[in-house]
Length: 162
Image 1 (cartoon, rainbow, N blue to C red):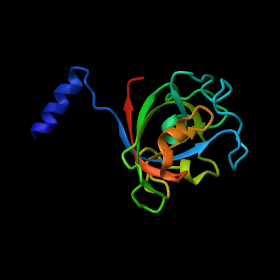
Image 2: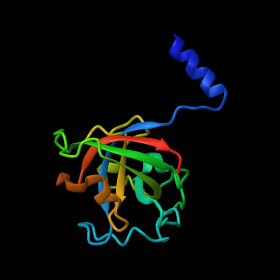
Image 3: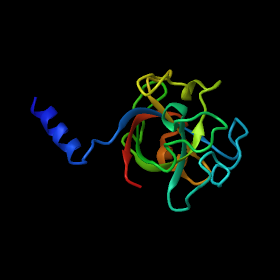
């Protein structure tokens, strides 16, 4: 009961709790298996990239619009991503490793099971509410996956200030 009262007061005074999701993490960019172009350019869905921040595409349910609709409401938001397990649920050798990314692209739901969750309460095949596709070309993917030896991880995504 006290927790709810504190949350109501915090919300009333503008201290809303940051959104946190169970998330899956993948990578995309030049030379990937899907033939993706360089993801560190201003031709991505949000129309920008930042040389000072790691970039990521986010699943359509969080991005807010579908392919061809331009910049979604998530454009420019930042998330602290923390990897914990691989796709089989095994703890990563670098479990707990975190990186902050800025959303600058869409991971479309159409024909992409990792990014086709139904709303923010739906999950993909790894039980994740959202998927972050980390840009390989700016080093985001390497910063999160590091020496873990994986290219798909599961963990948490917490919205943070950019």
